[in-house]
Length: 406
Image 1 (cartoon, rainbow, N blue to C red):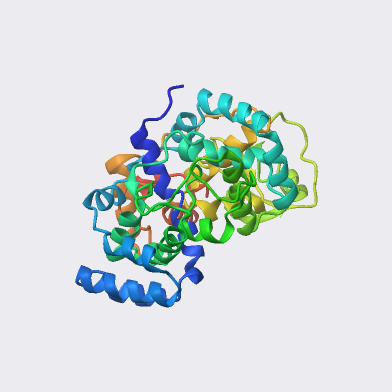
Image 2 (image 1 turned 60 degrees about the vertical axis):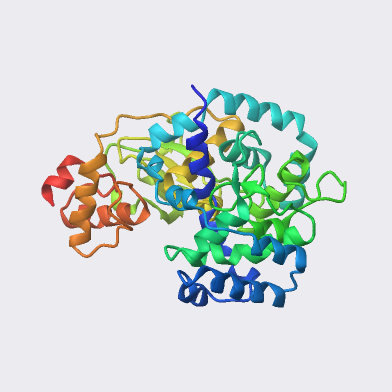
């Protein structure tokens, strides 16, 4: 398979970080409400208020000087409003992103940096393939880290009133890293402010950076050791459970109570086995004492997976179900599992048809997260509710039949 274009990878940089930004608001002494109230104000006044906040937080003159030179970047706003890559189906997206290049280089890096991956698992409980998968998807192992001025990007997105609460909490941590000479004032990264080979947000860089190679510097742009251990520590901080699985491919029966499926409805494997669910090869599920949900990214006739609690941690990295399932499956591939079975899913809705479905759902009172043609979590749940009402199989997959019935 061909390596995705740099433009596509750049789009992924930012989407991979947004949920993490929301996790670290405590890093800055201000509330999301305050950020929202100030967004869109006179830029000079807004920056002065931010400088006062940073000075109170202990940022010195070097960090304050960097803020004084920060400017708004229209290209950042343009990129923020153009994330159409996630309108692809899971099969389209994952088969493009899980390339031969990434599988080959992922395996090579797991061997080359085996000592650091082993330490990451020893210290934080996160298996090497999980870290390596994010490393691959975010920057192709450091090859494409982004060329946006990171401080300008964060200032632009925090001043913009679309989602200021996601980005404002990252500015003072970045200023602190600049002030401490960890990063240069003109550090470059992704358009949403992430930095380094696994696209770490400044708050994580500051709070969870690990000097893996022992040179006295946490360098997430150039040191694989630092990248691997910091990424493992970040994943562990989001709730990763040592020694537990994250995803498992399965085979579902032709008929079952589809309303029981979904990531959040976790049941013991023995319960799923009683419904006719088996391992991918048709062998019986073995109860491992854990609970898992059944995820059907393309409906009941497409690929099927058990997702455990560790899979939920992926959603702390990125809230796109398509991205997270791709990242989880890539980690499974790097751990030795085969490519997923595509199945024979019903034709889904795309483009204008998908937008038409979202509009109908919106008109019925559902929050679908925007009429954007993307099958996100909100849209999928609204589909499930309507499938239940219409007595259709409740698998969250948009079809012509559903659109016609609505």
